[in-house]
Image (cartoon, rainbow, N blue to C red):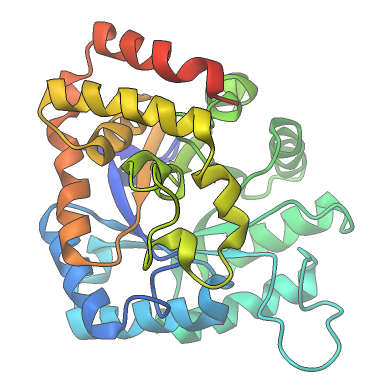
Amino acid sequence: MQYRRLGRSGLQVSELSLGSWVTYHNQVDVSAARDMMAAAFDAGINFFDNAEVYAGGQSETVMGEALKALKWPRLDYIVSTKFFWGLHQDGPTANKKDTLNRKYLSQAIDGSLQRLGLDFVDLVYCHRPDPHTPLEETVWAMSDMITRGKALYWGTSEWSAQEIQAAWDIADKHHLHKPVMEQPQYHLFHRQRVEKEYARLYDDIGLGLTTWSPLASGLLTGKYRSGIPAGSRGALQGMGFLVDGLTDAAKNAAVAQLDAVAADLGCSLSQLAIAWAAKNPRVSTVITGASKLSQLTENLGALAVLPKLTPQVLARIDDITAALAH
C-alpha cells in the first residue's frame, strides 16, 4: 500500500480506502464490519469513509462499535463523515435536512461523534451544495467546526468547481480554514468533472480527491450484463434509481470488452477498474466498498494491477470507454 498526500495538506491517506455506503447496517453488521476493517487495516488502509445519512445514522454506529472493538491507536486511522441530508427525524424538518446552515452543522457533528464514539473526525464534508444558505455562512460554520477541534480538515462532495473556488476564496478572505478536499464520483464512465472541470483547482488551491464508486455501483464488475441479479446492490430496497445505469446496453457491451483487457493483465474486471481510478495522480484515495471479506480481498488486488497500466493499456481502455464517459 502506498500513501498519498490529501491535496496540499500534510495528511497522508492510503491510495485505497474503505467506505460504508449501502453496506454498513444494511448488509454488514458490527462483527462483519470489524473483520473487514481489521483486514483492510492489516493491508495498509488507513482511511474509513462514512456519512451521517448512510442507513439513517446506523452506518456510523456500526463503524463506531467496530472501532471500539478494534482498539487501534487514534493516530493510526482516518475517519470521515458528511453532512447535508440530515436524519429525517420526527417533527418539523426545517433546519434538519437538505441544508448547510450553521444551526444544523453545529449540531450534526455532535451527533456523528456520539455515534462514532470519537472525540473528532479527521475529515468532514459538505455532502452536497446548499443553494438556499449563504455560502459565507457555511464556510464560517465548517471553519468553526475545525477551530473547535471536532474535525481536522473540511471539504466538499459533488460540488462544482465554481462552488469550491468560491468557498475557498471566502475562507482565504477571512483567514478561515479552507476546504482541502472534494469527494466526487469517478470511474471509467464518469470522468469529466475530475479530469476537466476541476483541472485548475489542483494547482490553484491544492485540491485533494477522495473519489467514490470506482465500480460504477457494480456495473464495472460485469455482473449486470444479464440484468439485476438477486442480492446485488441494484436489487436492494431503495436502490432502484441505479437500475437504468446498471442495465445500460452500450455500457455493458463496453464492460465485456474491458473483461478481455483484464484477462490479458491477469486480473479481474473489478481490479482493473479500481486500479484505473487510482492511476490518476490527482486522486488522493479511491474509496472502495465491500459487503463481505472476499470482495475486500479482491479489491485490494487492484494494487498489483497499477504498475501494469502502461500508456498502451490506458489507451486501449480509453478506446473502449471514452465515447460513453461523461
